[in-house]
Length: 318
Picture 1 (cartoon, rainbow, N blue to C red):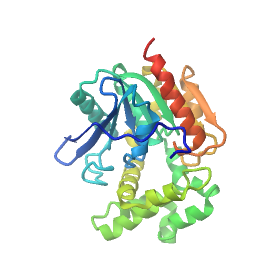
Picture 2 (spheres, helix red, strand yellow):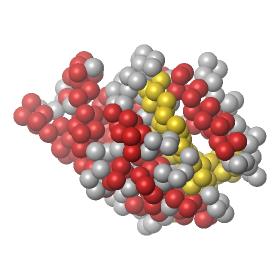
Picture 3 (cartoon, helix red, strand yellow):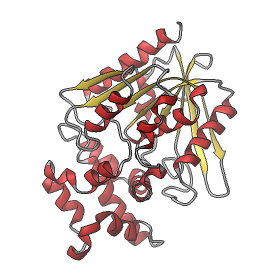
């Protein structure tokens, strides 16, 4: 952690559990300055959950940092629950949390699936956003989903071979459906190993140079059950978006400031999505980090993200 250009570790000054329906209860926390500029952190996945390091992209003396585990992720309960779990419901959850905390507007920060949700939330509630910091863009199009399931093998053939190893050859023509049959089983002896394989597949591809700690974290049940089950669930439903919805509706937020940060060698969310987003939103700042993959903890990406949150400290004063 000390090698990264992040702010020092901090602890929340307030946490809570927010029931949002008869199934789901969400964990949330606040860090930093209680009277500071509000910023909302949206984690990846879907289902990735929070890490203490997520708090460290923001100056705690300036920002009122709000983080929460989305439905089925992290400390939210039940872990890996895909029922009553859709993008519109996640957007509603964000609004419930904003209202609970008495926040009028906030900066929205998200990477990977967090960038997807940030765009969807902003387009639904532009009046509640002061701007966006977006990393590792994922627009949840069929082409991006197909790339994740099969295209990654062009760069990580041995990783993809491991991903499909337990799937019978006759089922490999539709890997998403094959995994869904296992991940959505009611039997933990079936869905837990499948979730571990799915999550390990992603974890091994996050960094330009492999990170053993990240792979171990993604293989833990705390992460893998959420990531495996919920990514497959959202992929099957194309993110609950209509065709190219996040690009078509970009006009709803083009008037707001934004920073887009993308790793040149991101094989999880390849750069084409970020280039498409910037083409539709030319007013946004766009930075391609040439020596980075997907993770927000690649040194170049982390530096760019911290620079963006520092920039928004002055943006807020204009």
